Image 1 (cartoon, rainbow, N blue to C red):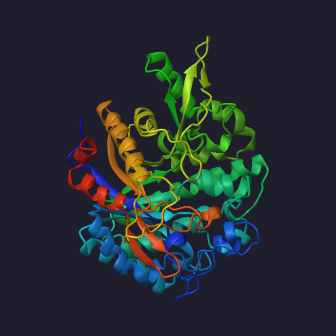
Image 2 (image 1 turned 90 degrees about the horizontal axis):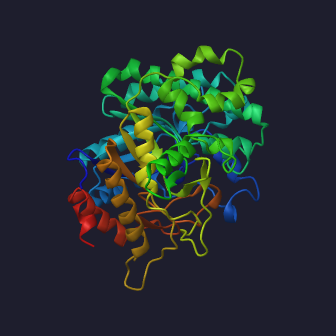
Image 3 (image 1 turned 120 degrees about the vertical axis):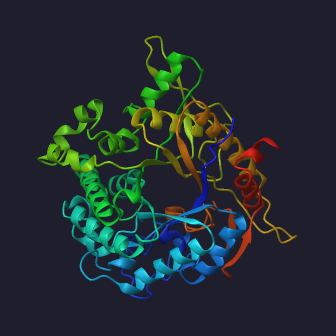
Length: 455
């Protein structure tokens, strides 16, 4: 039982969560700048105006990445930093920042993995309808080309979108994330389709810039469906539950709504039966573009739920037991999440699977000895990675693992109340402290996972 010799170990961040410098060097205003200024929407009135000040401290941060032994760093580019109004004039200072960051990462012997969109839409595009406006697909392709034309000589791994379920579902259906809209479901479905078209146009722009040298992926999220018993019937029930729209899960969290069009070039039959009347006119013509060939399936996985089988062989959700373990943010602790979620994705789409995010929030602080002791993060990560190894043993092609996150950071509507990092950040002084989990993770990387079996 072991990880492949070419397995990639990394950690991840996102632009708005770490960069700060929100009004510097020509950066435009994003929907998250607007949302955090909206009273009562974000915990404690927190904003990303300064965040971790990564914009000014990236050299220090890359040094910490090297100390952690990271082989890869997944980060996102801020669209408003590159094209402040969302279209038209390119901001050279924004591109220069990411060029310096990429150079620094490469000089440290770390591979950059670039996400084009991690939720910080230029506000001016939102004022034109955001993801409701079909024109956004061309605007995203324009932005993609601007980034790839400058960074494509050094960046080989690209991801178009991060968690469309969140920036569309939480942002435009439930209204708890930026832009804070509460659309009707038909409008939400049209936005989903527009984002899928934007993905396809972005893939075309990336191929035009880098051809097959670029390794391109797409990054959804969901909860894993975990078979409660390891019987063939229960495993099949969990597989069905993972991809199907079921009564206990809103449509926005059904992963196949997003992944089937991208990886199979079609909407799943059960999804289409429900949403066909809500899709934009002529949606069928977009499917070849949406289904352009890409190279890997990214997935952000944190938690799961257990699935049983009823007397008719249908999936049933197993109720949580009293005292069910949860993280500080109250997400379920289910290590088998990283066995069954990646396995089911690989079986369905036949693409290498990359765990683009996995981790947990804890109430960390700096102890009197000056260290940050987070044994629960070590235990959680060890349990999850041992299950990921089982997915490899089951035959799934698992190519990489990125811990979320490299730094403690701005955690969206939760502000700075949740700490996910391998590195602690004192937001008052910006002092960084590598946590015990970061030093442990370095040993995991150095041994390609063998360290997991020594605890």
